[in-house]
Image 1 (cartoon, rainbow, N blue to C red):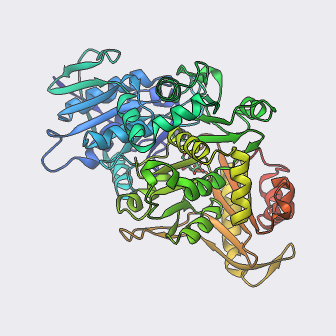
Image 2 (image 1 turned 60 degrees about the horizontal axis):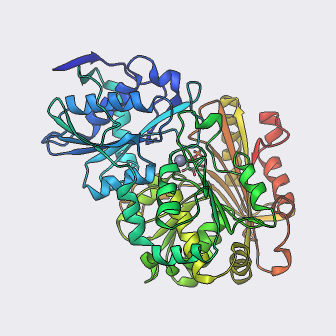
Length: 546
Ligand code: G1P
Ligand code: ZN
């Protein structure tokens, strides 16, 4: 029987324009916090004829509170009249797999439970977001509607039913709704099999191509075991930390050089495997390291774009590429040479959705270790590893050879991101406001010996639907093409995080071996001076350098 709970509005922490919620577990688990969000989503997206013929996909990265949250979502979905729910077994669906399942089963949409690369466990973070029928994060039109509903929600519809057994594959009923517990891996593996030449990869691995993949005790474990070890025949042990744990083994499931330092160290050894890779909490990010060489995500995107034709799915070339604004312009050069369009979007995967749906791009990516293609509407960590493997196998070259060849052919965009974390929110906002006011006066002046060509607050007009997104980051572009970008993180859960992105292009091969921080030293100093960073934040150094 449907029961009605009194809802709380507004939902603390709900902001317009964000595709979901990310908070501490304690906040999520308290009262009806999660239920308020789920009901707000359903209120915002309910079709005129109701949800009767609609399928909802539900799954998450297995972090603490995942299983409880899934039961809550199922009951509310049933009470709101959904015809069917597809739920990953044990509540597991990586974010790209959820996108795949939504698309393959023509679902109405999905609720994905994850706080991505943020730590898990009882003291960690939890999150939820709504993906639409194209399998991608809800666009701003929908997220704004969800936010509006969260401001006026007054009741939550739910059922008083026992918990569904999400460990058992098969069908069950919850109220009138059919709940199908599905294998979380099968649809995704089938999709990868269609994109890549598994026979060629299997042969390359049998012939000695070596891979190590760190699932970081997060969601990609089962996918990586199934694909790299079972399908492609890589030896057992290729996949490390392959069992998803509610607290990610106490680690931070962020595949960067800080949290996956052990992988970096391993890959710097002379006898390292050919490819070292890792993925994050929900499986959408990737870290790519060759023997003796780390490939920065912006470069990885460019190298994948330049070589994508070596995998069957992209054999006929790519329609175009897109990158988020703060991502380095390395891929722009590849697009120019391939004579395909290159779009510059705001930060966040949702901005790629329209371009992908319209067939205007095939590959896209962000500097924050997200790379993907038109096969789903999320970034995809395991896919990125498979595309790299395909390229290594087809070219019969090492990652280092591929990278050096790329830089020699296209030049190199030296690039770094400096993060200042846990800042006082008011201080960080004041810094951005002051810098924003300074920008209009900067063009034509010079700083640190470099002439400034333009400076603005990035605004994006979606080429497909014409929607405009403003205030997407402050950028200072120099006459020599160098660039500094400032933005406040939208995903942090404590205080404010200022991200400063610094980039410079070098055409000659002379600097190929130079250390990135050294190559950018003068611009880094300029980035601090321009924003009066020390004065506003009191910080002498960034907390994280990537
Ligand atoms: C960060 C990344 C951004 C990515 C997002 C979700 O957002 O910078 O590229 O889309 O996580 O994975 P931010 O914290 O910078 O707002
Ligand atoms: Zn993620």
